[in-house]
Length: 191
Image (cartoon, rainbow, N blue to C red; front, side, top):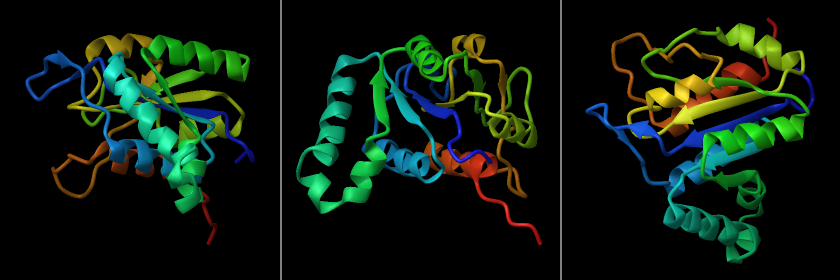
């Protein structure tokens, strides 16, 4: 693994779908901000993008992040400040793709995660190899009941769903992000 992977993570709050399959926008949660930022920092992610077109949600996110970067939270828990310093809030996925492209100097490979499986898939070992080869990657996670179909027009492929031994497959996005980041960027010991 390269010492500094060229990987960004995006968490999409709109457009996503609800349990009936209707396209909606979901609320940004404090837990998603904190926990995914901590996982991103652990695995060397460059930027954790939070995507919401809703101004009030953007303001709430900025207020939470500010508390940990500038307020009492920074003094009380510097590790949390370090993780939350990775978070950037944007209105649309296209903005994130463009900013990642500008930062990395080329278009990132945009890969979505999906509990149900969508379009062309890339295996975890194949994507891990791309990352090890220095290819910039943008991992896209969805909230609600998953990414809206229109998001998949912006991605090159999806990762296989995470499965346990049974049929139950309802992980929180925080849990899924941690598992996927470990599969792609975690240290692997031989023997």
